[in-house]
Structure formats: structure tokens, C-alpha cells
Length: 383
Image 1 (tube, one colour):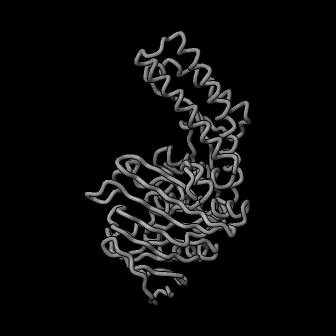
Image 2 (cartoon, one colour):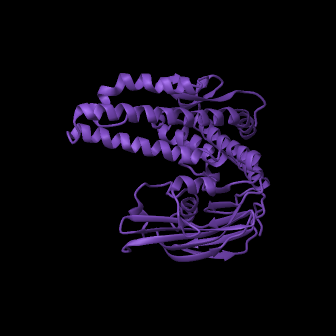
Image 3 (cartoon, helix red, strand yellow):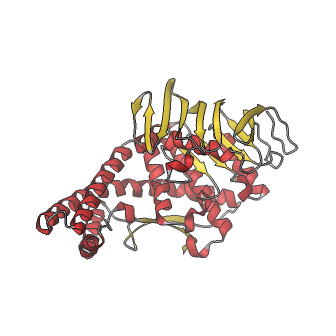
């Protein structure tokens, strides 16, 4: 799969740019603050339906403008997919081939994997980011996951709305508690199936994760594993019934707190994913370098699993991630990625330190303008 062209209007610091893109490695070079990351962000939006830097779409609009538009043309399996994302006066519209689409289904249809300095901090960051790691894998690997995820989200929103109404007195407690019980049962039934997919992904990712981690660290031994945590307890051995019962039991404990707070406190949106290195929680016992390597390994394992299932690679987005690695790890990492035959978008402030790789295209970036150039660097980068 590849993105063959992209057009941006009034996006961040970009007035208007239309770029023709190529399979293989596409490099965007320039000083900080010129718009390189904005381009990566736009490609991410075309494949995820949202930004990886903010949840506030107004921040994506160029100063003094009322909206923005990002569009892209994808080619996959001899088919064309035209994606448009349009934000105007607070309203966002997304479409693929002229038909509306949700961000979850867009992510399933056109998968991409992001490597960024922020993503390398996920090991010790908020649980939501670790859940998103697993959800990204499930969405891109298992076709059934995206509609299931949407169903769980719909029930969760209904329950959250009811809890808010109960707290505000808009619904009587007697009638509301019956509805609350029914919605909770529906949520836990669907969520148990969703969690089964998460557990399946963790199981299938396990050997790949360890192999990639040892390769990145240039080690021949060690152990790296993933745990799925519900209410502080490991759920790796849970079946569907165990998952449903664990959530229901927790809900009985927190039901009164849900009513008083007006918030939904139990469900897959509260679960966590932990990484363990040689039996120790990586959040507390791994160095920053090891934590970065864990996330790099996870994303590389994701790429391998996606290919094993679908026989094609997702688009890879690398935003200044090489600066976080030493020279040796840069070379191993880039050799692997280029060898994957994925389409790659990479940003850098200076091309000369890049390992020996061949680029399909290089764009110089200055003040939101992109100029395609030809370059050969001392580090081996050539076009």
C-alpha cells in the first residue's frame, strides 16, 4: 500500500502544498519548526482520522483561517482510495471515495505505524497510550475488531450519558438503575469479546516482540513480555467468561461511585498494558533507552504481524525518531525498515548522519513549503 499524492490547504503552517510521493523512502529535511512534523501529522490523519499531537482540531488550522483540508490518494491491490478530511468552524468531515467514514474504520482500511519521540515514552506514560498500542494492532490485523470497537464505544457513550442524567436528576433513579444495569451488561458482553482480541494480539506479538527487542539491543538473551491488566490483576489467562465476570464484579464494587461521579469507571477503556523486562515492570526498572527500545520493538513486531496476516506492509511514519537512537541502533533500525519494502516517510534536520539507505525522494522543507531535491550525503543517503 502506498500514498501516491497528498494535498494540504491551511493546515498548521502550510498554506497550500500538493506533493507527488513515491513508494520506498520519502525524506523531509529542514530545520526545526519549518513544517516537517506537520506533513507526518497530515499523513497520520489520512490513515487514522485524527492527529497524534492534539485532540483539538482548531490547533491544526492555519492562523487567521476558518478551517483546513487534507486529502490523499492511496493505491492498494490495484485499487484507488481517495481520502478527504475537512474541518471548518469546529466541524470535521471525513470521507473515502466520497463516502463518510469513521476514524476507526479508516484506520482499519489504511493502516500506518507511527514512530515519534513522544511514542517512545509510552512505556511509562498514561495507560490510554498503551491501550492504543494494542488497539492499533487489533484494528490493522483483525478485520472484526473495528466494528466491535465501534459497538463498545457506542454503548459506553450511552452509559456515560445515562450516568450524567442520573447525576443531574434528569432521569429518575428507579428507572435509571434498570437502564444502567442493562447497559452495563451489554457493555461487558461486547467488551469481553473485544478483550479476547486484545489478548490474542498480545499472544501473537509476544515472540515477535522479544526477537525485535533483542535485535535492537544487540543482545542474545533476555526476556520481554506483555501483560494485560484488569483492576490491577493479570488477565492473560482469562477466557471470555472470566473477562465478563471480572468487569461485572468490578462494576458491583464501583457502581455507587459511578452514580455519584457521573462517570463510567469500568470497562476496556480502564484496562492497562504492562511490559516486563526479565520479570520486572519496565515502567520502574528499565532505563529510558530500554523503554524506547521496547516501543520500537513493539512497533516493528506490529509491522511483522500485519505482514504475516495480510501479506502487505503498513505505511511507516518516522518523525525525528532517529535522533533518539545511537548510530549503531540507527543503522539496524533503518536497515530493517527499508528492507520491509514499506512506504516510509521520515523527517530529519540533517541528512548526513543517516545510515546508508537509498531514498526514493527528498523534500527540503522551509516555512511550510516543500521543494523536491536531489541529494547525496556523506552518510550514504542517495537519491
